[in-house]
Amino acid sequence: MSGDKNDISEVATRSASADADEKRYLRAWTRLRRCRVALALSLASWLPAIMVASLWDDYRYPAAYRWSDVVARVGLAVLVIEVFALSFTRCPRCRRHFTWTWYWKNPLTKECLNCGIRQYSLPVRE
Ligand SMILES: [Zn+2]
Image (cartoon, rainbow, N blue to C red; front, side):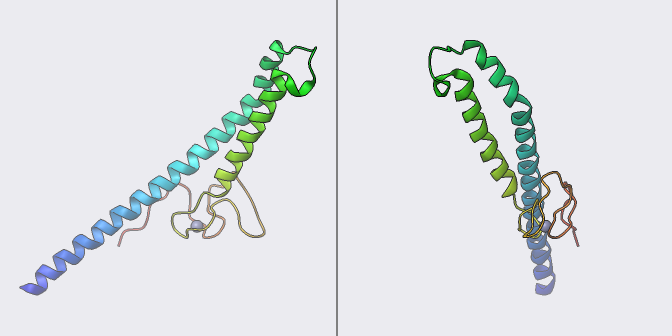
């Protein structure tokens, strides 16, 4: 009788652990997708933002004080931050960097470059 009770609690513990794993995977995929979308939007909008800001440039001042230059610098800083955020996104299975290894980088990869898990896949349940 007590063996049955232990089996049930063991199954419940394993199920809770599997749920936690699934949530961890979903959080990792959401983070990876957000980093990629943010980087794509920033890349696409950087040059148009500089062009729009140049409409308010006052050429009596040095280039470093013009709106287009300020927007370019801020946009570049944002791009660098986003590239770092994408690069340091961890794989939920192997917990190493998803998009790079010590000899190879691919920010567009759909598989972890360390363990090969496909993006958006969930942990295998027993
Ligand atoms: Zn991995």
